[in-house]
Amino acid sequence: MSVADLPKIELHLHHEGAAPPAFIRQLAHEKKMDLSGIFRDDGGYDFRDFSHFLSVYEAASEVLTGPEEFRRLTLAILEESAANGVVYSETFLSPDFCGGGDLIAWREYLAAIQDAADEAEKKFGITLRGVVTCVRHFGPDQAKKAAKCAADTAGDWIVGFGMGGNEGMGQQGDFAWSFDCAREAGLRLTTHAGEFGGPESVRDAVRILGVERIGHGVRAMEDAELVQELADRGTVLEVCPGSNVVLGLFPDFASHPIAKLRDAGVKVTVSTDDPPFFHTTMRREYEKLNQAFGWDAEDFAALNATALAAAFCDDATRERVQKRLES
Ligand code: ADE
Ligand code: ZN
Image (cartoon, rainbow, N blue to C red):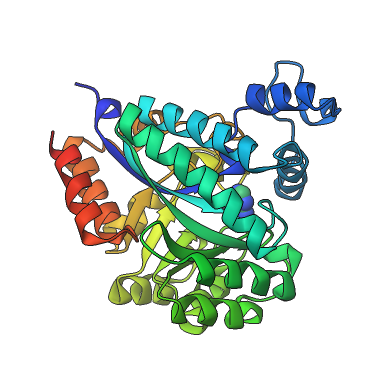
């Protein structure tokens, strides 16, 4: 059996970023919207660099105009994830793309997404949980709206709060109010750090925001003391190697620091981030890690154990997913 066939846990997936280009093109066609500028001739998403990626992502999201579009999107994402062997996934949902931060609208979007997730669990045997994310480059005031939506819907299904977007804008600490609000509502915390920001961004994330997981975090590798601090704290990195390679952080998988971080005692997990944008899948991530570092079934079992322990779901869900990993 190839390592790519193993069951998988994915902790870092952006809902809009998981939309296949054909899905977005079809919706644009139905709504008579012209999105031709964001696609390459071969049909894939077209972007030059990270900030262009973020604007193409936001342009594509414009066709996701209501709960019904998110219901369809959720089913499409989960069918694809399940086909890649994913048995449990956490997805980043932004109130900014689901009603613009309005609480009543957010609840309607969420109901549609959860409905689709229930259907997918029955059909494809995959469990989904939601992590509400604010968008860093929309600023701290907009983030507060996202945090209030998150706090209002915190529970068995919305299990976490986090932040994506352009790490070049502002500081992690500018968003402390939102992270405190989410924490007080019982949500678990993660934030993008150490992707395009350096080690100081990761340090601020754990020390100021108090997050227990970090989206990416790979640039912590530039600071040995910080690597030790992450290992000591037990901070879990949601590493997305394929995303990092396409966005130019590292030239290839062999140069990616995931293996060095793991060997230094940092808890690492593997995810796809925005799979169709980065021409990846969870199967491909496993294959590439196997080729680059020789990771075998035992390594991936340990990786999945770390991911399941770090998942923000409740223990009953964790036990149910554990059985899927074992079967
Ligand atoms: N939003 C979607 N993908 C992202 C990434 N890789 N970094 C920051 N924000 C994002
Ligand atoms: Zn991400």
